[in-house]
Amino acid sequence: MSTEPLRSLLERAFPDATELDVVDRTGGGDHFQVVLRSASLNGLSPVERHRRVYAALDEPWRAGTIHELRIDAKGTE
Image 1: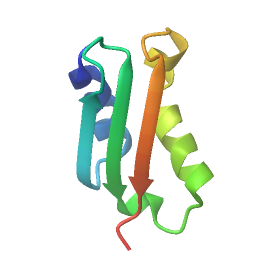
Image 2 (image 1 turned 180 degrees about the horizontal axis):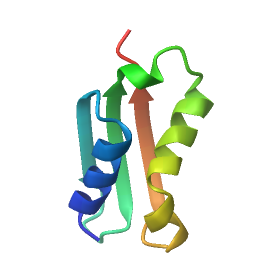
Image 3 (image 1 turned 90 degrees about the vertical axis):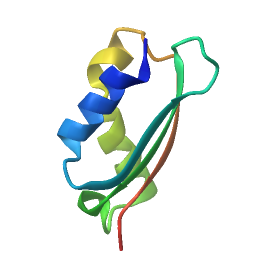
């Protein structure tokens, strides 16, 4: 899988994102890193921020397209 479908899902889930980067860490299309800065994450715990990213990527995650996901998600405060 390329990074574009994941980026699209995240853009829809976090339209206020000031930073969004999706990187294929190994080139194999199943190990990704997401860097996200969004005001909608302000005030949330790290666990809740990760839950929101996982929720946005639920379909490819359940399909097994994503084998590993590293998340760096923060608010904009």
